Image: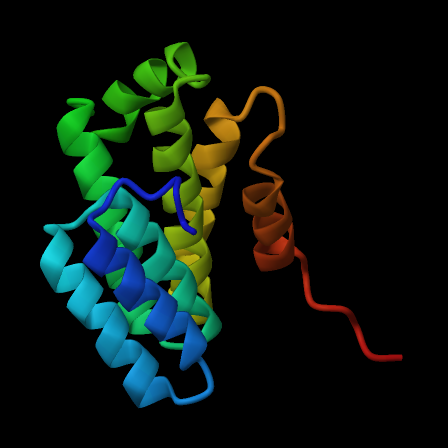
Amino acid sequence: MLSWFQVPEDVKQLLILAADNWQNTSVSEEYLNQALAKTDDSIDVLVAAYRYFYYKNNYQMALQTASKVINKVKSTENLPDNWEQCKPILLNRREDEKIRLYLTAYAAYGLVLAKLGDIEQAKTICMQIKEVDIKNEFQSASILLDILTRPPEEDD
């Protein structure tokens, strides 16, 4: 069970307990936080945590978790902070698993920002994702950008 996770068995068990207790948010969140504390920011656990917090509508924690994924990939892949410097690297390495994870996490970060009302920053992130999404694989960013930039419909 959860064989694809590169984490110790006790962490896997904590994630299973979090899932088993989904209906009791305080209990499931406690298990998830224990798993996070034991893993030193494992990518697999961070992604699971992002999904958990997003679907529990805990957008601040989802944002924080997506940010950790972004920063972890930036660090391990030596990506610059400046978008214009980062863009050619992302374009050249777009098939690399870690770069795809970075783009996915960055798009998720933009989505959560939009949910939290930071529309301008969300639009910026969506436009940046579109700049490097040659194959239109990160459609969520395009769809979100369309929603965020669509003019309000006039009432008849």
